[in-house]
Image (cartoon, rainbow over all chains, first blue to last red; front, side, top):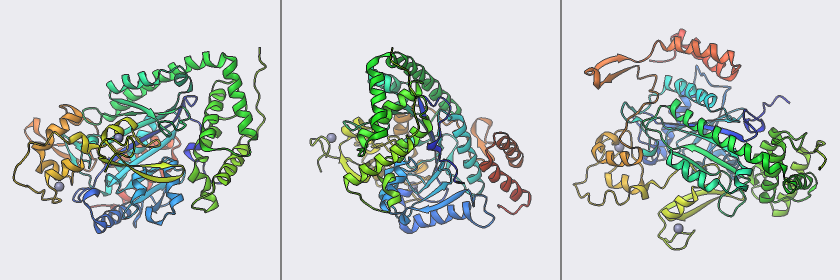
Length: 352
Length: 173
Ligand SMILES: [Zn+2]
Ligand SMILES: [Zn+2]
């Protein structure tokens, strides 16, 4: 057991509500057209230049990063990267000329030749925005030692999409908001936030699909604000949402019907023989609410966080080496994994 | 092609999502794209910029200019919503600027600058060359101390090796 825990297997600061944070920086090399204007040969050249800079002789990063050409991955492995939030669906849709630099704990993932030549991403558990930014910025500096980035003093870092001009930074938080969702205030909150240049949207699935009450809060403004300012804004708003959610949870958890739902959800997760993805997500969300409020004792938020990631279809079937699994087999695997990880004895208060 | 989501408007964007463990591509209209906000955790990764720019540039009918850096025309940029290369921002600067203002407002960059651009021209100081940073080596040594303090050993290893390489003077230029 020397494998370091993956970032998504841990619980971080403000972890009762804040599940994870991601900071992404867009960078482009000087002297090469952006990826959209590069043919396969051009993309390959960019790959080589970056690979040489990062892992070449006199390497500073060997041992830190694995070099993963997207074309070397099976379909399932590629989709699993998306499920683990390490790459975008766009990134794996055209594997040619694209590669990923991935750190061992999967907390640093650098996409090469996605929208921009380089997209540094740092992922962390909990509300660790500033820490994630620091790591991203230092990696940026380190890469910049050997690579020249396209930059304009007025427009900032030059990007393929003008939307990212300036800092090229997009910071986002995944928040678990079951109580706010229950009280029906998410829609209004989201539209208020958009006026402040922030977006709040479903983080997991969309529309009628189960969402597990997980929402993504992110900054939209990249030009005219420094990175620190953008992060402070985001953090201030996040803390307000956290307070609002905690207040609503306190009331919600006092209700007998909520306690019943939470306890039953745990019962199903601990005993089910077949578990669909949507059902599983909904039940995990209920149990997470109970655990975060201290109603369920003995279920760790870290375990629940990793289950959210590991029960997704491609990640679930990855160890089996199969590109596809019949529905029932998939549900069986999921139920087995959940039972094993939630096998601990859980205590909860007597009803009054 | 008609939007695969609402079945009404013409599709303008292809979105890529993960549905039940498989990559799926859907052609949708700009309305639906905005409403949906896109895929699992990745809503911020792409925007239907083409639709954002459409309409803004219709009256343009100038002789075709191509960017020397990448060969793209302005028409292609507005159609795809993607700029071809860094040089495009100069070549088409005037025509891009209303669009950039529409997205960001009338403002300019206030974030970090590349460490490598240690000397930059500052227009407001009469194009004087102004040093931007203290020694990169000093900065790195400071970062290393901090990384060790914070027990960020992964980073510390990187920084230590970088400092070593810099001191041995064999890493760049
Ligand atoms: Zn539509
Ligand atoms: Zn160009």
